[in-house]
Image (cartoon, rainbow, N blue to C red):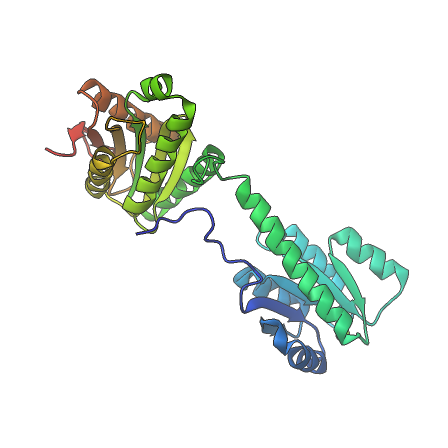
Length: 322
Ligand SMILES: [Mg+2]
């Protein structure tokens, strides 16, 4: 099983990067389509500015080729609209225009175009510029993603968690969908570091990250919260199901045979807070409840899972193996 982890965003260089052409001339669409066919591009066509803006928001293309001279809305206005909307703001736009005056060029770059190609275009040149723009976008996405990856374990980091937890919480409340959150903490981790050194400690953290990766489901978001603490966001998951997944994780961590010099089992305590229906509970309070359950698990002797249905009328802490 694989969880939804870093590294599974499709690169825009992958086959069929979607390119949206906004141009009032059907001939231009035909030519571009024919001449850029070998580029692994899926073409989408809009013949007017308003259509182009709507399509861009709906399909989030990897690149937009934009004409300036169009009857019902000028290309620069289209560009301004694309850059003003957060849904389309980051899509690179190459302006392809017969208007080669310096004013339009300057305005286009000021508004956020990544490139400007003059019509009639030299096909070889356009092809290279399209490739460059797609490559650049892929690079930017990769860097943005790396900023959210934990350097040691390769899991999502805390900044990613903070952002996604808010989003998943808002979605669950709005649509009344189930949602669960698990906080995983390794037992006596400090003594592993103290006894065997930090390198062995790091090996354990990476090993646990691998186990979390294996035991979680495709839509779970596994994050390293800091130190020896991990959090798992489980969308569309009832607290009962979340507790079961966590019990499986707890068993797998305990079962793991570690390489020497580590000659002991590693165990984990896990606190879960979940709701089958939207709960009268705040986003931070939800996290605090999972945290409290983690400490209940520690207090009960560690190596255990404690969970609460925060959507219940009278939430109570329960053990996963009850
Ligand atoms: Mg035109």
